[in-house]
Image (cartoon, rainbow, N blue to C red):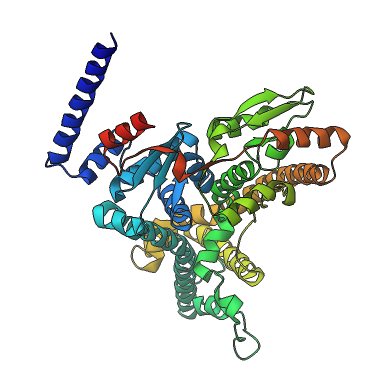
Length: 472
């Protein structure tokens, strides 16, 4: 039986050797085989959101290689999304996929990965141009709304001036008024009052900071509709900070630590439901220690690519040295316009509203409607519904926003106060919390991806690696 076993082993080795020689003779290059293997698991870089792609490329450029956990923490995205994005980028730039003995995956990207992506895809080339076009169009819309204020004032007061001039002519010719008293205000007066330096002879000098402010036309839109919620732009940064915080602490944290970053209102009463979004995003799971404390483990964030020995030592010491810091929300400002711009916008808005109201009263006279069938008065009559709507919304929307923002900012203050209180507790914990944190730190671990533990690399021939495993 021993001889037959030896013969079978020899036959097996012979077949494997023939298969290896056949693989080396194939016309397909090793790069093509690597891309085919990665392609089976990846999509396209064009489908990866730009912010995610930029964050992963930046992290890979700094570190050279990334695990899925590294990518998820760097981009602040879900683990599954980070895996798909990492493989998609690796496929398009010719990156290397490696697997260690634990089954963890590491991807190495070339230093010129970003240039390779732009060279490969025309969509990625025009993406910055499209984004810039969207930004320019948004600015143009804001400026158009501000220009509409001046257009409204110009049409309204020019029409009032025309009616006033006609009324004076009628009085000189002895025909009487017939239209009632007409208030006259030259549109040039509006432009005079627009100058912040009027009454002082010249406009004051502007500093560098003043030149960085939004233009006046944009400030009109900002006063009426606001500038959006600044916390929406910080959402990505919040998840990045949480992912890095968890990774720095070996993938095991408490609910109190997670609450430093969550934005949801907590109901109290020991309910830790606010951690669910973090568990879903980073594939965490609850666990109970020997003392009965509930801790949250994130296995995907416990694996990181190999780093230098000095960096590794600092990485291991960082959890105990770094102080927890709450990720606070920003209050939503009513407008980013300066105080001088706000005052000027309100004065122009009041002037426009008064002019629209006065002209509406004048145009309600049927005699005027018959006499002025053409010209600026007729134009103002046709535009009157739009002018009235503009004048109404100009102050209605800001009033509604002011009450809504007052309520929202009050909630933000409450949430920030809760986070700051928890931050203080984590920095000076009581005995129970101190034991809970110590338990989490004792369970923490960081699996560093070493070159010696690699059992598969897409850069090398598959059969050759199988031979090496058989020899080991």
